[in-house]
Length: 528
Ligand SMILES: Cc1ncc(C[n+]2csc(CCOP(=O)(O)OP(=O)(O)O)c2C)c(N)n1
Ligand SMILES: [Mg+2]
View 1 (tube, rainbow, N blue to C red):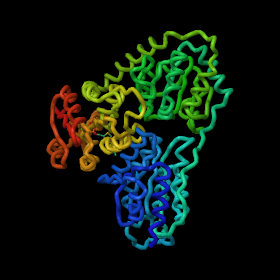
View 2: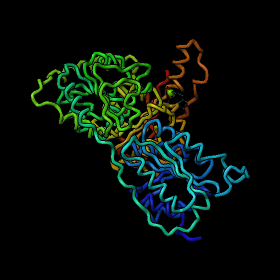
View 3: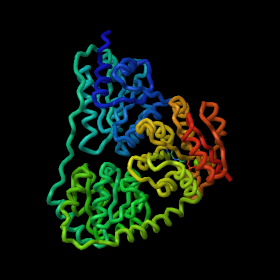
View 4: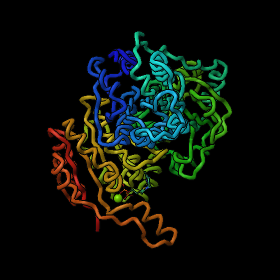
């Protein structure tokens, strides 16, 4: 077997595209990928389940803007990663999944091969932007290059490349190529001028920024300041405007106060968001004249009618509107006052759900430096708490999956975020149910010696579902769980572990954990 083979074609192409870290688990079938990592300067990180690999890769992409790469073996390795792939799709994150596949010529024959799956490419194709099964080593390299090209110039989404076993072993004499830069469509000048004319006259403008805005922080702040518009974000857009900025209203789009303010606005700018139901929680966004900016045409009229549309990268479109503003316009000076009032209203509304989650988040916030990253999960402490009461100064500092809302994300995301932004302090804050979904990844964090505080809010099980049962008149069923002694569990795995009943103690505990030589599980006993 030539050592410069289909596996080398894939790995060298990863390296040519700037990949230095992959998340995956080796198996019988993907060893011709693993063979080449060291020579190509690619570090393989081994989580304890492929779903954890996928979530780590998703958070890696979220905090760094670089695509997350997942390498699984065929069959179960790949199907274990499917939930993470679907998560990256729902959350618009760039992710490349690589897996081996049955040998060429055996497709669909049900031969009883090891890890044989009915049609894994087709299964993946139903979850991600595209899934491609290659036929040669050259095509494998080409498909990986195409994957990287697919992440630029449009909304990033995951893709999958399947390399048949025989192709992984096929001799390869090619050269690895980096993907050409894919340009985004340029904003249409007339639309930018019309948008600027509306905004110049607006008395009550408002801006809603989504995940598509995380690369447009300067332009967003500049436009908001120029027109005196308060800025609210979606969860994926959290921090696109510094949440301490005087025009920031926070990640407030689900709140009725924000939705009412949008309806009462005379000009509403919506940038880089589909305004989906998972953003709006059965609410609606309408506004006076609605101006929408998106890099994907299909998003421009989705869930909210737009009067003016700009199909472009957010930064370029916002800049085009800003520079088209007439210089002799009257200054709208009351923006900060309107933002402060709206922010107070939104906080009051968020408080009705947050309860003690506000204080818990405040205690962790105090411990984490400004450049810190928080990862959360589908737990009340995250969506009632951190989203509204853990302010971040910039984008890419909050990892949570509001759309797919998948349990088990928070801990592996803490790992992926730590590797995606080396040196940045990272903390994980999540519920007991969420933690138990991927508790085995604690072993990964220990092995990587990550100084990761993992604050687990133990409210005795699936509290949100218990609450939903109660509101439907269903007696608690399947929701009251026995939670292990997590401090003890942590020490067994080689992490530090502590237990407290006092949310105020979290500040000191998280600070200590950030300075430790390994992860620390902080079990907050929040049961009655
Ligand atoms: C993979 C997955 N399975 C099931 C659910 C449904 N679900 C949503 S919230 C929740 C409870 C989560 O418990 P925990 O993390 O302890 O948070 P709590 O509601 O107790 O604050 C469940 C089971 C989900 N979101 N994701
Ligand atoms: Mg719970």
